[in-house]
Amino acid sequence: MKPIVWTAQAVCLLSLVILSGCASTIPAASTRLATSQEQATIQALQKRLQGRERTIAMQNYQIEILSSQLDALKRIDQDTKVQRRPVRNLMNVAP
Image 1 (cartoon, helix red, strand yellow):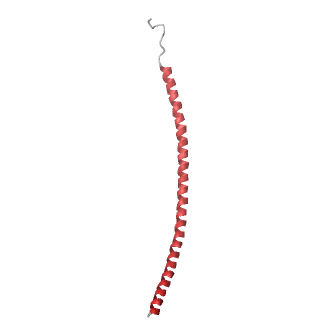
Image 2: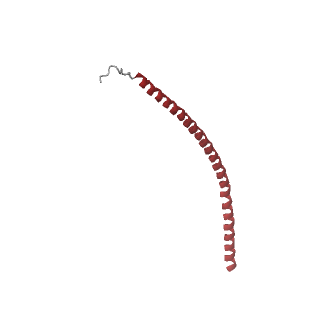
Image 3: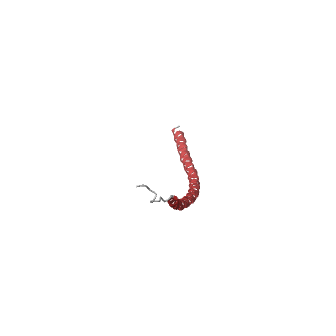
């Protein structure tokens, strides 16, 4: 009876080894597939990020231009206000 027990144990052990080998190869293939999908996703996200960075850079440039134009308009407005002020006649001022 002992040889039958040893044989059964050997068969079980051999089956476990074979099953563990099969199980380890299946996730490896799906891992490769997942990593290629992840790489494609990463590349797509990098392209979107670069596009957004270009958009932000362009908006910052436009903001700088508009800010300088606003400053110029403020100076023009101040100059026109100064020119509109009535000049006091110094002769009419009482001592």
